[in-house]
Figure 1 (tube, helix red, strand yellow):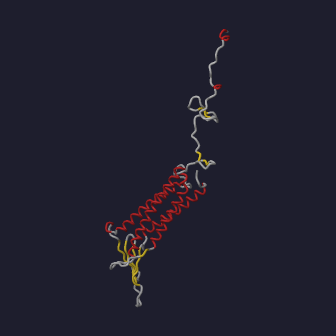
Figure 2: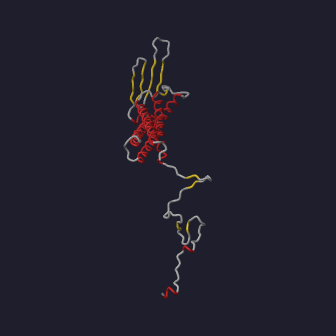
Figure 3: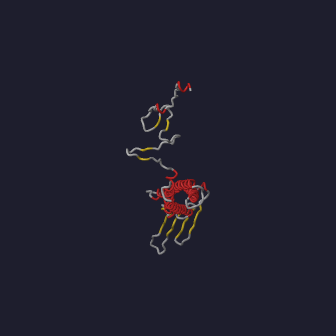
Length: 263
């Protein structure tokens, strides 16, 4: 039996679908966005023309923009020549997005407001599977962002850097991706709370006055008040256990009198 009413369960699942799908789209957008890391040089001086340059990068290229708004970019070379952390971030994000796409399909088919997926038990299992996939995909996306943040912050907060090394700072795609991960995780929790008690029901037990629990016995073949036990000469009733059956109720052979035999 469901913990939530039918209408309330549908509204929670619809909210979870919208929130998790929006978070998945946020993560997808960050994969193609610019300005994952930014750095600025110049911008101050005594001349009339202020010279400033911006260096920024994403997962696919490094770019340079000067004060005249001219941008020059250098695309990353083949896969095996890219920095290891950039490759790891790409792989983790793609893995998380793939799992999230499968989760969106499972949850859409398993929601109560759709007429797909079969019986209610199968639909609840699909919703729970989608919640698990959302959670795993969120962990993969979050690991990718944390790896990139660690690489940037380690250089930005270093006491000294080598010659020609720029101190980059985090750009908007990182924060948008973190918000997307939070939305995906929140949507997975909304999915799970609607079907968790249905898929994994707790043990039902009636509480008695002494604080213990009473489990109803398994049904037997005899349901009457005096249900005979498996032992000959005993019965199960309101009397004492192992009490013998009365002799009056036993079938005894009747003796034939001499007068009846003569007749």
